[in-house]
Amino acid sequence: MTIAAHTLGCKLNFAETSDLVSRFTLAGWQQTDFGNKADLYVINTCTVTAVAEKKCRNAIRQAVANNPDAIVAVIGCFAQNAADEIARIDGVDIILGNDRKHDLLHYVNDFIQHRDKPNSLQHSPQTTDNPGFHLAYSHADRTRTFFKVQDGCDYFCTYCAIPFARGRSRSATVAETVAAAREIAASGAKEVVLTGVNTGTFGQNNGETFLDLIKALDTVEGIERYRISSIEPNLLTDDTIRFVASSRAFLPHFHIPLQAGSDKVLRLMHRRYDTAFYADLLQRIKTLMPDACIAADIMVGFNGETDDEFERVTDYVESLPISYLHVFTFSERPNTAALRLGERIPVHHRREHSRRMQELSDRKKALFYRQQTGQQRPVLWESDIKKGMIYGFTDNYIRVRRPAADASHLVNTITPFRLTTFIEQDEVFEDC
Image (tube, rainbow, N blue to C red; front, side, top):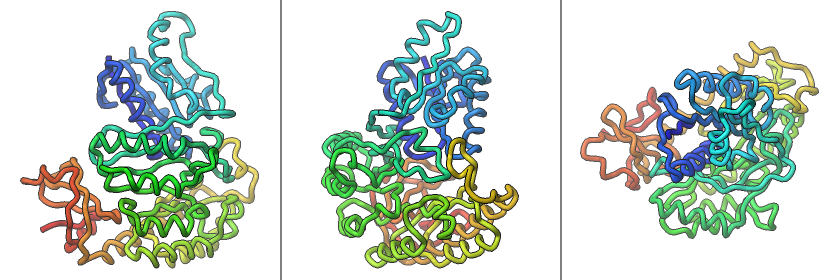
């Protein structure tokens, strides 16, 4: 029996998908690419935007076209929030929300036993009232692992449907999380990316803190690098910044959601900081780690973002020491408070704002790369080879490449690399 999986959305979803597939392979299933014919297709979904939901529907149609007789399982956030809608799509056999998807192997085995009976669709009741927590990490990449350390969110920002899909914030204990990190170290992976929905709330359900976690993880032998994939500005404390700056393995790379560069819009979003706080936070990071890479999520086209407001936002973002942006176009989500707030921005304005913000991100990234020219940074080399080049990332997340000839021994090793030749169109430094 063969299984093919397709993941939409965040690094957290990728960690969970990989963990699920590993359970199937341990049970004797063979993994294949999603574009191939398989006996089971698993689609781990996202509900952040309408585009993500459209991609889910397209993936279902692709799976059915690849093998009309296959079992199609749709799991995750979109399945949690829109199970009835998904059930109406031809070809879907199993629908599991976030509180049930970890039992997918059980549901698949049960479906196989009963698939010849009428109404065999496995449509598990959805609940986020008292969800459990499941540690998970990705297995496919021998170099880098996405490690789920937290799930759920209590913030209920007005634009976001994720708390409805994933429930309240929760995590394992520090000791349990460290035990899983030791498993990752035993697999040989050198770099771990900490993922979660609201990672900075780690431990709030058991009297521990995110700082407690990263201090403990820093002691795990075998793991040479940690990246914090995303952390809310109000939860990135001075103590955490200082620890990262002096730690053994945590890297000078932060992903700090901004979401809006306007105090007016931040208030409408119910974010827990203002633009002055955010700017000061970035300055504190740069004071201790001048070469740190700082990424930011930003949403354009939210209610109230007029053209004049957007001009002020771009000026503000331009002033920040941000290395690059993840730009999102506001998409109305069912049941969110944003549906009742302020004036809606026309879609064509949203798209134009998104285009301009992406251009700003490109300029920011090129500037950050050029500022690093001449430095020597440690690079972790990855296994993928393209057009005769092997690639890797510095500690501060700059992409580099060198000729792959006679370089296979470098895979999953860390070596010094001098940043001398910047190839802007490829966004990479090259060893010539």
